[in-house]
Amino acid sequence: MNQTTLSKMKLMALHGMHNAFKTAIETGRTDHYTLDQFVAQLVQTEWDDRQNRKIERNIHNATFRYKASLEKIDFNDERNLDRNKLMRLAQGDYIHQGQDLLITGSTGVGKSYLATALGYQACIDGYRVKYYNTTRLLAKLKMAKSDGTYLKEIAKIERQQLIILDDFGLQAMDNQNRMAFLEIIEDRHGKGSVIITSQLPVSQWYDIIGEKTIADATMDRLVHHAHRFELQGESMRKKKGNLTNDFLIEKK
Image 1 (tube, rainbow, N blue to C red):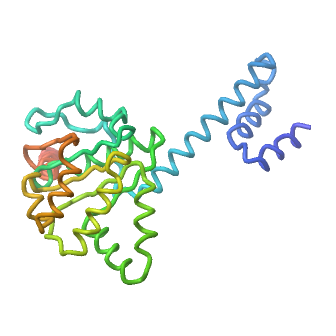
Image 2: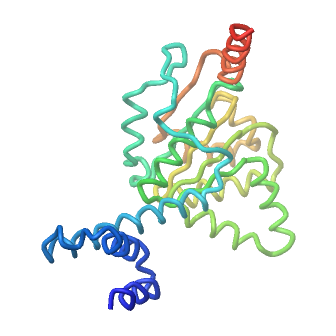
Image 3: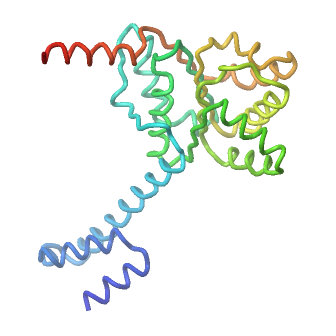
């Protein structure tokens, strides 16, 4: 009977419940619980398994460049990174309210890592997240215009509750790019959140977007209700390189 039950659990995709029941049988722990406790244990294990698989799917679908976590963020005073503000944002209310986050700072100060860490936390909390390199995304949308898949790509972006646009402003936009960028921002305004990272201060984004009317429309939707981090300090990559070199010297 137990083997039949296990087989049916598998067929019904009750993987967590299947593993918990199988383990209980193999270890002889079925007698350690009352009936209601045992059922509750099976249901809880199935619930946890489904939640974990959902998180794994969210992270996989987000296509992050690398793994990042809030626990590993350096809050050194020179970085100008407010721990309390970041921890409040990590609770996800800004996503629920459709607010944006703008992260600026010179190369290597940890902008992408910070954005990715918040993205990972959003995935854990059950939000649909997608990471994009801004230049590559705009190039992809330009190609989509020519092959007829543009609306499909825009709809895919719109379905996300949070998108991360990394390395914004590496090159000035042409008319097609600025119109696509405006459409993304306009579609998400008040409904979905955007995290944008850039080496340039926000005041210079107007010049990157170009064409005053479109730049004004885009920035008006981005700036006024956005949270901001203006990171400072030494390049984190350089700092880690120095630590590695010091370690190697000490070993010698």
